Image 1 (cartoon, rainbow, N blue to C red):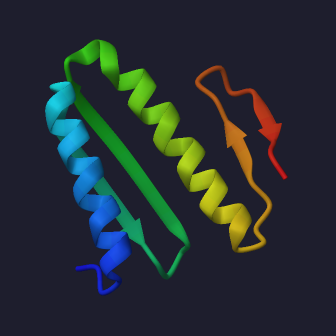
Image 2 (cartoon, rainbow, N blue to C red; image 1 turned 45 degrees about the vertical axis):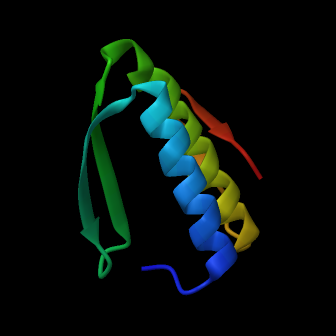
Length: 85
């Protein structure tokens, strides 16, 4: 639950846009705070939207991490690493 009304408004607007786009599915979240591990697995419908959604969310997580002063290293599907900050 979001306590900030502006953040809640933005969240609601994003949900509405997603509903209008026809994208749905599920995300499986595996979080282990003690080890610092966060793993996500997506099953997006329609399937052709999955790569775009995962890339967009990875970008958002990278930006948020950098805003906390963290160095971000992104590993792609071909095990290539690129430093982003």
